[in-house]
Length: 388
Image (cartoon, rainbow, N blue to C red; front, side, top):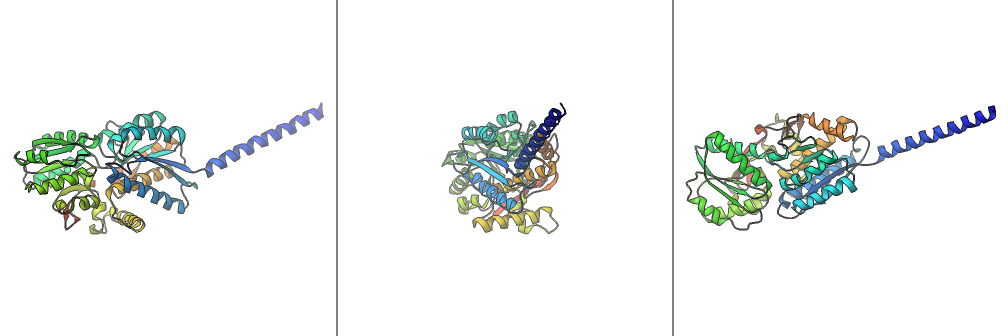
């Protein structure tokens, strides 16, 4: 009997030891497995203007982070898909990232349309998500698992209309695209104009893939508008700038932060000269005073990007930089990849210095920026200069 009990005790100890070793192995395996960051961007199609620098930035900084030891002792693995500027593809890729790739967090998409297509699945799966698109509707109303990096369309409208008023303009024409960003921007601009006592002399729209917007501009030319605001993303606003020049229009032309890139200047050519737009500090980083908290991080990002890719940095890549680095910061503060804990850490972000602004998230604000994060810039001599 004693022998039998002893034998059972021996077997029990072996079973316990085996279970403990298995648990340890599982824990070790989890610790050694990479942290998966999923992303859907528009590297091709009309929004490649946004997605190409975003993809380059994400790949560059995942490499840099891993070279420095990773996060929580684990490497990052970037799982990235190109939606070709198609919201339906973004929706399908979101499903793949969640169900097949089993990512820990998401950074992207490039456009408002793609972002909105992805959100229902992300909210259902309860995965922390930072969008690189701008429309207010992404985070208004607040969605528990959704955050975004770019300044809102409402902030852009406010910054532009404030500048118009400083120049003595009381009326303007609005020309917005029919995509998600343009639609939301149009809504916010009309509301902002009414609140600021500005008259919308003409309200025109264009398609994101349009190659000629002369008919709309011809109407605007005789509308009595004192200035023009183009609200859209992609390459179409550069085409509008060229059409504007061809028509010899005199009303000052504004765009939004959707064009805050030297790529816009390159495509528009001489027609970009004199155009004003709100922009993050990144485009004028070298001109900032040393006391500006964003100067060091902006210059470091610009140098890293330009050294690697031999091309100009853009604010769109800057949003990807900030989104990835904020997600990494949240994972570090959470001390885990537990999705709820990472989400809570994102929501508690306070004083995060990015190239796009200094972020302060809260349960009621999943963007974390105000209009002071914008600088008004103007194209002069083919480069951006701050309007002072």
